[in-house]
Length: 326
Image (cartoon, rainbow, N blue to C red; front, side):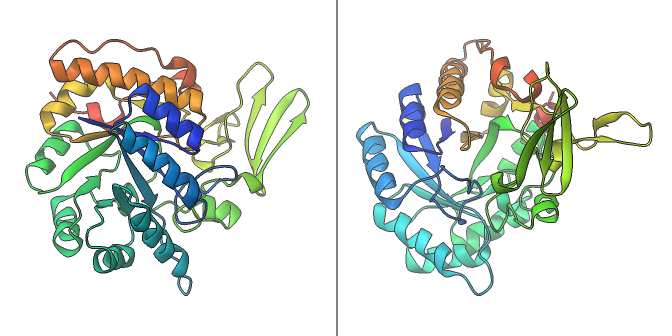
């Protein structure tokens, strides 16, 4: 089972490789990837150097070009695919049908993976991408049970990659408009969910208040850790008059204890989320999952690895994966 790990900077990429990543996925420093934040991502020169380091260690690098091109402004996305192919990356992760077609026509030798942003979760959709664009792997949305994943694998002829650790999202990937509504910036087209340029914090009567655009997202007492303001994880006052999480309480995905079931289902790769996180996070999660995967692949018990200090809200869940899997 392949361990696919995030890197938002060359330093994080080195941390992921040192911790045991089989693959590191990255993005270019523009709107062509879904983590288009200041200070993150790679220039072509940085990617060239990082790719050499990875290949010298026998590892691989994938490039996420997983946002949707804007009408009348296709050039940045075409350029990203061309640059990735020229550098010699091991695969590109794409969501847009037109961009998949471009990559197939212009760079047929370039391995193509279907991004979770395409929201392909049934055999008809996945087999279409396989036949039309020769997609080699699909990254599945975080809404399927292990049983559903196993059944799906039996009906498709592509590798499957599933998320294992990191941020949860109540929306179907590729279909969220909340950030666009609040800030005018789309995670699916501009690559930014809750962009930092629209985030504000201020002290009010002993509490830290977080805002996104014109919206107050949360209010934290001084003794409570403040989370990043995203609308889906905001705490709002409802009909009861008490503040509560409307969509989702801050919780991280962690399927470590379900590795034997995912291996049995036929999953090819596990994906760790967090290109916007620092190298300490990357090293801790990757090294923990490296130990767990190695044990599970040998048939040994999966060791307990405490990730509580880096999970959102200090809580974790296996999400949909654990539903009805027995």
